[in-house]
Each structure stands twice: as C-alpha cells, then as structure tokens.
Amino acid sequence: MSAPWKCPQLQDSMLSPAQSEPGILPAGTCGRVDRAGRPGALSPVRRGLGRHRGYMNQALSDVTVLDLGQVIAMPFCTMLLADMGARVIKVESRERGRERVSLGIKRKRNGVEERVPAAQYRDRNKLAVTLELKTPQGIELFKELVRHCDVVTENFSVGTLARLGLGYEDLKRVKPDIVYASITAFGQHGPYAAQRGYDMLAQAISGYMSITGFPDQPPTRSGQSISDYYAGMLCAFSIVSALHYRQRTGMGQHIDLALLDSLIIALDNLGERYTVGGELLTRAGNVSFGGSSSGVYPTTDGHVAIAAGASDAVWRRFCEIIGRSDLTRDAGFATAAARRDRRDQVATIIQGWTSARSKAEVVSTLSTGGVPAAPVNNVAEMVADPQVKAREMFVELDHPTYGRVKTTGTPLKLSETPGRVKWLAPSPGEHNREVFVDLLGHSPSELAQWISEGVI
Image (cartoon, rainbow, N blue to C red; front, side, top):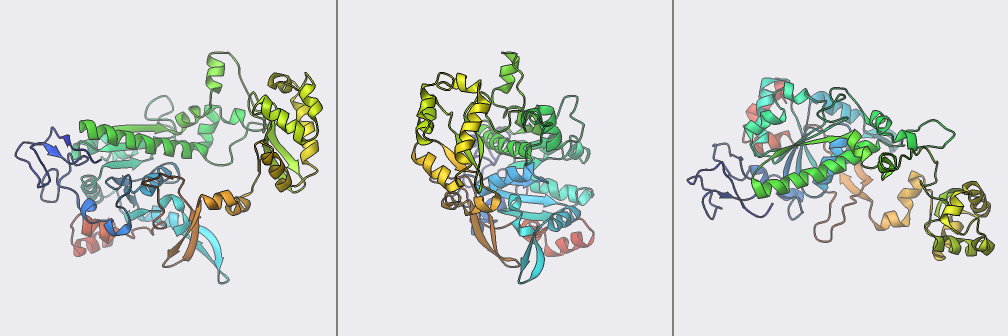
C-alpha cells in the first residue's frame, strides 16, 4: 500500500504532515482517525506496535487485520497474512480462549505430560486480545479497534455479527473503507445460507466425496478439512485483491467466501465434463481420472506413488527400467488410451515389480531413469524427508514457558519478501495491554476495570 490515492471523504483543509497535496493520504489511511478525531492520521499500530516484533519490510507490513476467526478456515487465512507481515490482532472471548488452550498439542517434557497451545500454528505471528462482544463496552472497544485497522475477518454463521451491530454495513459506517471478509459454509445468500455447516457437509454437497475413495467403497471424506484450507487461501487472496482495489479507489468492500464454493472450483474440470460432455465420473481410487499407469503400489516396506503414465514416452522408459520393453511394442499397452482399457493388467504389472523392492530402491531407480516416483510417507517420514528439511517446512522457536517448539514453517517463499515465522501462538489476552493501552491509548486503570467487569 505504498502509492497514495485521493480520499474523497477528506476536505482540503484536513492535512497531515505527510501529505503533499490536499485530499491525498498514504494508501490505506482513508477513514482512519486518531483518538483526537483527526482524519487520516496513521494509526499507532503502524507507528509503534510491532516495529520491534519483526513486522517491518515484509510485503504486508503496512496492513492491520482485526481477526475474529475461529477453528480453521479464517485463522488459516490470517496466518498467511501474518506470515507475510500483516499485523493481525486476534480477538476472542475468555471462554473461546480457554477452549483454545485446552486443545493444545499434547507432549511429554522431562517425564511430565503437558499441553502446548503455543504449537497451534494457525495463530502464530498474531497479537491476542480478549474481548466480550456481548457487552456494550466490548462492542465500543471493538469499533474503536476497527478505526485503526484495514481489514476485519470473521467466520461466524451468517447474520451473527450483524445481530451484534458488527456486520459489514455497521462497520462501514465506523470506517468507510474497511475490507470485511467473511467465510461461511455455504455463503451469504442462497437456500442453505442460514444453515450451520462444516467441511464434512461442504465435501458432501460439492461432490468431492463422490470422487474420493475406491469404486467398490462408499463415498469417502478427505483425510483433512480441505475446504477450510482452500477457503482460507482464497480469502487471503481476496483480501489482498480488495486492498489493491482500495488503494486505487478508496473503497472498501465485503468479501463473501464459502467452503462449498472453494471445493467446487477445486474439482478440476469434472464439472465441465458433466455440464458440457455429460460424463459423470465417480471414485477411481488412487488412479487419476483419465489416467492408466499412475497410482500407489506396495513395496517391501510400505508404498510408493508412481506416475508411469504421465506420457507415452514416460511409459516406455518405465517398461525399459523394469525389463518389459516388450510392452512398448504391444498395441494393447503402447498408448494411454489402450492402457486405460487395461488398467487392472497395468496395475498388476507395476505391482509385480514394486512389491519385490523397498521404497527407496523403487524411487531411486525410477527417478534416475526419468519416471516420476515418490515414497508414500507417514507424518514422521515427511518431517524427516530431505526435501521438506531443505524447504524449511518445520522450524524451531523458543517459548518462555514451553521451551523449544518445532512448528510448521511457511510455504511463502518470495525472493525479496518471504513469509516468516516470527513467534508461536500467543496466550489468550497476552497482548491486552499492548493493544488497549498502547494502541488505543486507554489507561491501565481502565483496562483493570474492564477486566474486573468481564469486558476483557
């Protein structure tokens, strides 16, 4: 948000020292006011909060997010933003904070079992405050925070925040250029909008379950809550897009993301294969749709994934490696179309070769020969994988209470402004003083009073 833009809400007389001409403010400051009510003043969160915490000089270091996210989808979205330098203020009730702590990862240290809530990676790099939004003072403090932020994020059921006076239309009156992002199961409109929903339901309705699993087995849920992660990534992209639009126009907007939509867009071209071609595909196990020589095969010590049918050339290389060059001259196996008609025979041939060898031997032999292959890792094997280590997808950080904690690294590898894991998940309310006193300018006595009254 480096380029300035004209802010139509400002009068010519409303100038800040940084302005070079009337009506021009640094991008992202339209509608922002300080505690004295001066429009356009850079918020204290930009001037002071976080400068010592490693925010500066990252791609999103001039973006502040007020995060009401819970569970997976929105916390994952704001984690990505925080990895890229955005200052994310996580807002949660005391009760929600206690639940988060109770779900900390279990481990034994020095023979004593403990939970490590700091290892909840989706909340890393964030500032954490507690605030009860069902109290009038809590509502006012939240709106005060909104004035200092660029983005508000939430994934409550449709209408929940609007009933508290904190919906998009409500907060647009507080800060006209706010970017307000919502993730729900089914979106803000449509016959299912009012229904509560989770990843399981999104996978079911989207058709994703119908294509997951083996042909002779029931529809199967993907092993993780994939729609939450897809929606989180799409929401992060939408937020950055909305901020870019605001930089050009001065206008905020409401982002409406649905778990269901995020899965439908991830179905590859299966939708078009039905809507255009009338073809209804179903479960195919570990074989790709339309594939013939790719799949998962047993070894003496586990399984390997092999893409032997990536092309006819790859298939020929595979046949040479396993000593079956005769298959390349057999019309029944020479082309991808022919191999699709003989999938079971192809699988038997590949399995006959892999089952007599170890994972390492299969992968090494095929990879050296130009055939894509990889071990099927469990999580422990994945963490130890040399490629995962080279990419620094697990990093160790120190924590004052829990000592050294190994946590998932960032996948955001930009050459000039890479993502960074700066600190572990904070405790509930860990930054109450930093936010309510240092940022908003309230007194320590006010903070103590609100804590005693159950507002914070």
